[in-house]
Length: 435
Image 1 (tube, rainbow, N blue to C red):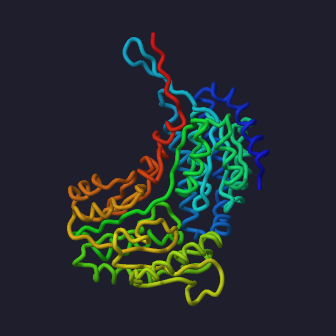
Image 2 (cartoon, one colour):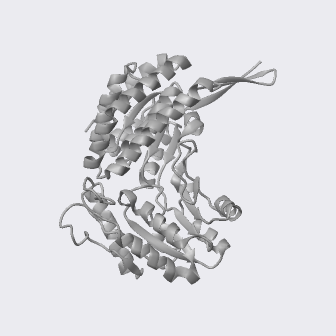
Image 3 (cartoon, rainbow, N blue to C red):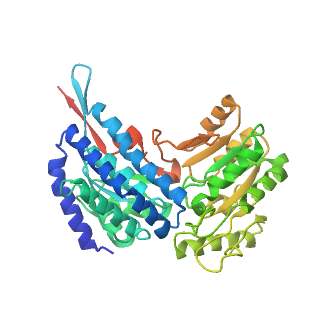
């Protein structure tokens, strides 16, 4: 693990490089991003294999994260040639967009490489220099990425990576006077701590934090298809996904039907070593997360929440490892702790609504607002409900993932956006020149 002194060295390197890189032209930046993409693509199979071992992803999820990584490069390669860094506003005003400066990118362990690249790539393309600090729970992924980037002939100091803990290295990066911006993906508690550490320096804070995403099953939806898909997406990666649809919101008069479908789907999931064929999801990423998820399940049972399937402890066929059974509670009141707090494990709550306005009220009843899901064949109704939900990323009928839409949250889910032009512009300042 790196030290505070190592963090200072990384910032010095990035700060010195920024003096030159901020003035680089678009052609040079574009050529660098292309070299970085080629270097990553070459290393990607090995990195994906490592994600299975270090994080416990299944190969399918690891390959999906590789595709996301490549999309971070591709969107910038498409965007950069035509981006207007300077434009006239009338006869007397010129608007100029300039790099914000040295960026500290502090990332999570559940999608570590994608999170590093979705920050570093647009920041470098904007003319910033970057210090990346991966999660201490996924340090080797960061080293593999750094080794790949070393093959891209990046100018010294433009891309820097330091492994370290959040409490020392992360805090030092947030406090450092030469860091202009913090871009962080992590928990609400971690995001609050980083923002507090950065506050004295009046830095730009860009955060993608937790979620408790609603999945609203409207009365005209195909329950068998919609609920089964919702359970699979919720439990994917052992529930360790910030956008997982962990609150299944169904009509009260069809709770029994919805619960039976959800339980049947969960009981068909296969939990085990992620590299084995047929496994749906593997273990939780670390001991602390395993203990936290099990404690949350035990507390919910003690509080009287109806357990429909699963429960604390490992699946019966597993006697070691951080494996957790797919667990469903329902019906759960909207204000129950298990329906309000992000669990980050394979746990689904089923909540009931009386009418569509009540479904929207329940969807908006947490402090989060990262993502949401709406299921109905009626496009007008889908748009009405999607528009009323306070979340930054709303999916209708499980569309395929796209890096062309901005991703980010409302309220305690963070501020700022990632992906596409919106993520790119997070790393730019706007200057007005008036004459």
